[in-house]
Length: 454
Image 1: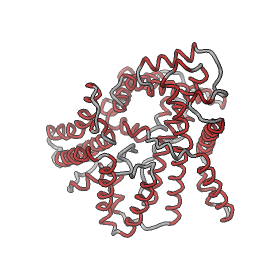
Image 2 (image 1 turned 30 degrees about the vertical axis):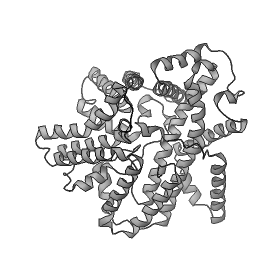
Image 3 (image 1 turned 45 degrees about the vertical axis):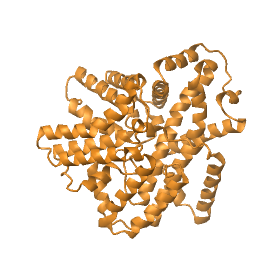
């Protein structure tokens, strides 16, 4: 198995890195194509023909985008798998392998961006179908992003990148930090989140508040952890991939959230939905409408349920409302209040995002208002945790995550500072980090990444 959380992925990435630097640069894209197809075939073999077929149709149409009907046919070819395999089964209540095709939301939108960029004249149409398939199936991004642009990713595969020990080591460090986020924070938080959302009526308001907040932390640790893992592997290969997160818990507005959270999706929505609708170069009312439509599309991309549409609509409405607020007044205290308020909006909206239905979300919000009690720090077993140590490790992991983000928010690069230490001190830090990771990680949970379902 070569899922990203498995030891097989580490072996797979290490083997690919060895072959990568042994392979002549002009042939590396072919090596990567083989790795991409192997990776996807192992994880989701039934959907591989869909990926290959959609890519072929987009490639064919991309060479003829001067004709508008062909361009529209290409867009249909890119988006039809998403409609037929994600939204139609959800509408009809079907279940099955193809209804959960891995990464379908990612490779379809990447093909749309390629086709639109060709149509706009930003890039030339790709002459080789295999190279477009390599782009669409890129194994580091296909399951959860980040979204790549064709003109940013593919030229890197032809560059004569040489082995750089320092760069490779930085990549390994970043991947290790991603695994810590996933295994020590996200998977432990998931235990509490799953318990709370399964039966909100069984918990008091403090436990429900914790469950709601912990889902936001879980999703961030899970998704940004995956991003760190794959960006670290990319760094090992000498590939620069888009950053997807920038300390989102320090955002001081809903607009700022989307400059920090799932950045590559935000940029895709801006370039291919918001700007074509008219962007901000229109009346205030039209601009507000463009924002709301864009975030409704974002909600629809995440899933076909009403919870996703409401979540997207809330973010659109909040951003539209922010455009009509008076200018901000400076001050550290006011900034701290804005950060706290923004986090409350983020966590509250994510409760709806996570809920199985709007009724489930309403039950949780009602419980926060009405369910008495304050057992959140005492009755840990009610939250699914097996011991007090589990509870302490959960909070300790969150504290470490926030401390690192706070340092990065201040512009402090911890990897650079560690690298500047004398060799004995540097290796002492590495050993402590390894011990903390092994002590705090949940290695037997086998939890998949949350965003792999979108």
